[in-house]
Length: 297
Image (cartoon, rainbow, N blue to C red; front, side, top):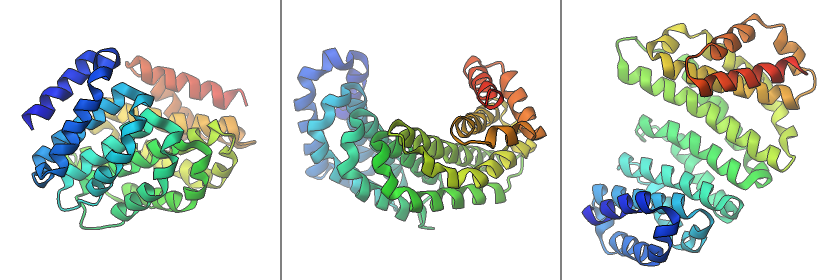
């Protein structure tokens, strides 16, 4: 654990130019720890898997040569439902690998998506992991682009179910853990939807998203209307609204006629106004882009 932690910090500091010549030895070390019993300790497994994720993040495409050896470990982590911390870390590192190798993740997508959907449908898995699982689906979709089309229907069913449950769930303002979880869950729905949209758009397959516009518009409206949750954590609430604005902007740029419909909706104008008035510059930029996308159509 201490060794992998030290190597993780070294990887972050040295970046690709300083770490690439040591990468083979580092990966050998990580795999030996996991394969020779270190994986029996949840804390050791977490640290080693995080170190692998950091290496993927730094090496980007150069990480491809390690993927065959790493994926069985990450997929096993996805199924470690009784060790939810390990499961959480594995999900995050799968996202790192997707960003590192992009379309080259395609051979691993089917099994990974199947395990993620199984985990999302399992009531025994700690609920804290489920938003991460949803975000992971978006990472995979963004990485493999048009190849995601074959997984589209079951993923959208799961995403819509998660969206509906997130709106049906209520939290007391004093229940900070539940507030945080609901904000994260709603955000992860947007992340998964946006990753899917952008991945398909990169390969000109975005037309299959049209069937999802109706429920996603309703979801955006419901999120924007939950004033208690949005105000419980102001900046997090504004980021959530900016995600909704981004989704509406994406739909407006690709769906004939929807921009005109959105322009007639008072709640859309109110949402965009709030996002554009944020003190956070990145949130304001999203709001201005979405406003322009909806108004120019």
